[in-house]
Length: 285
Length: 271
Image (tube, rainbow over all chains, first blue to last red; front, side):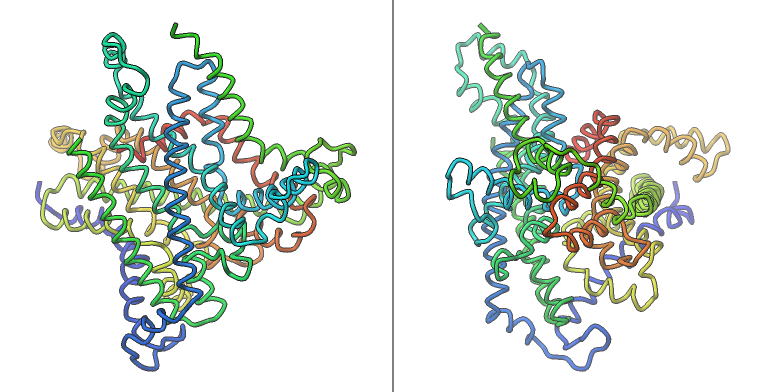
């Protein structure tokens, strides 16, 4: 099986696309971030100026804090609900197929559209319910930072729990019924079964689910744009939106690119650490 | 004893499902109301049922054209991704060498790169090459989509024995023929997974096409929806009818292919 012309011919199209679309822009982007590039030409090399500016950029720091907090809360809730739903629909219910279909459904629809639907729910339907029952806390949603934050958490949990559910189901269905029966015979209660059998066996699912929820929440843009638009006063703006606005609204290209490089480093480091920790934990279990 | 807890659990599941569907319910009932009626009550079914919102939204969204635009981009990109990812994965899995390992690693590592990190230079380069058009967009989807697809094909290919290729080669087939006549048909289950994952992603993608083909007559459903929503932001009766129109084709497709879709998502994540 000698490597021949066919080898390179088969690989070339995909590899060329990867280099042109991802690798080259990434490297070029790193270069631009050290210059005063304005989107058209590079006038001079400015060293770390763009990066140093980041420390005084309150809006960027706020968006970073908001993103981290949002990601942590969402990852926890999505995995909690995802595992819960998976356990519910793998119990022997008559409706389990239908329930799976319903819980998964939001994932087929684009984040932009889901955000618009929930904007209606939070601003109009919540308001209506709040007025009808005199619940003040349901009124004025998305007009404050806190309600904007929880609005996004609710939207993402509603959307992604069904996705993560599907992953947990795959692992839960892999647990042999004999194992559970044996535990039943030994007199194990529900918690003991969950803690000693189910939990360790779905551990690999955590690795996958954490990776997916992390990358989806941390890089979120569409839902952020359509639900809150970053408002009020950019206080619910996430990093992805901050980068976009710096580049295409303030037209500060090289500075936006420095943010983009930092964003890449954060995402890469967190993802690698997360996979490493989870793999280690799986082995230890 | 085992059955005793099933009924309450069943009821709990149904209540939860209704809560899950409630946003769609609210969208649907209010899309048939007049502007005034939404203002007075959002929760009740419409008293004056009207199709007028739909007629106007359909026209403003130029929905037939917009749907067609989404279809071209999605089908074009998914076909291109399937062909070139399968070919690359085949070569990388059959020739075991340092070069193959490095290239495979490069594809996998690229999955860690967030879109926003390459977005600005990417759009600039393609703008200078005058490639901010449909062809350019499909090429970009190949670049972003190849990683996961190659990863999935690569995994599936390791379970297809090499002896199969060798037998076909002895019979006089060349690599191209071996791949398309022997190997690719055997990859059908993973091709379905690759197709489903990429379709969901590309059909719904907003940011990339907004930077590449955001011109009249080319806009896909999410792009047109964003524009439409901006125009009618205080007119929920029209906005909700527009959102419903955008969702209906997806729900119909889901109704017919739900088993494959859920299986595809599950296989794509677990493997």
